[in-house]
Length: 128
Ligand SMILES: [Zn+2]
Image (cartoon, rainbow, N blue to C red; front, side):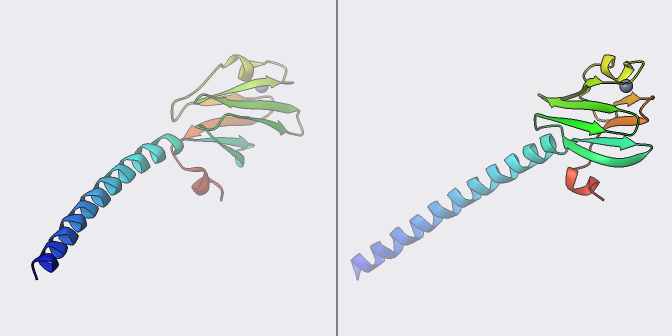
């Protein structure tokens, strides 16, 4: 009987241990999820003639070439910044706009009627 009681106590103890461990893991997961969604929630939206044609994740280093009737723009995301790496537009204002990283900021290429905009929406929401 005594050994059974001890066994029960051990199980209870281990259950408590697992509950605490689970709660800790859950808390850390929620914490990481919040940080993760906060970082990856920033999306670069590419508009052509006021129409959304492409999106890029600001947390993912990537280069995209946008081909338009007017020409091309090479848009690069690097270390949380977005910038127009090169373009064949006449004024080169988009290229000279430099790096953008904050939500709400935009790079406009007027000759190509292209706008590169940083939004707080996730890329999944921006797809439609
Ligand atoms: Zn341009």
